[in-house]
Length: 184
Image (cartoon, rainbow, N blue to C red; front, side):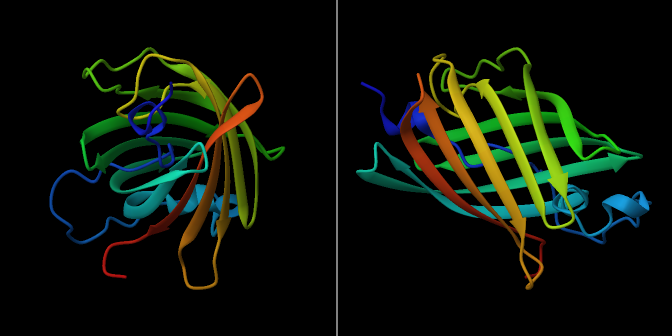
């Protein structure tokens, strides 16, 4: 049976910000990426979210991240905090001029192992970022699951993320996440 621990995710994308929240460094973001969810992840941010496993039980989590968007490549460390532990995800994404996204993500599972990178594909638009990959749940097991993230920029400066986790095309969990910059 797949439990909360094996499905524990958030974004399953993007949050480490280890260290204090200080003055942000001004970074040059390519003009066509300015204001997109990809550009949002440049610098420090945080998130809060919930995971609903098998549409029955719900678990809250938080996360911190620190990203660096250099030219069109985003590198991002994300640290999740769950009731039963912490987990790291390490992202390396490239935003292509045609609107596609490619890259990898590594995920720390419950025993502390940082799993090998898995391939991520997706697409972006001015207000949206969609990512899909077959990988591991943060703080979960070594079972490979499918993750589908749909992120949208909000008028209040946050980014929402709706994640569906599945296995053999059967949905096992959903996650609702809100990303925000420190001080919000």
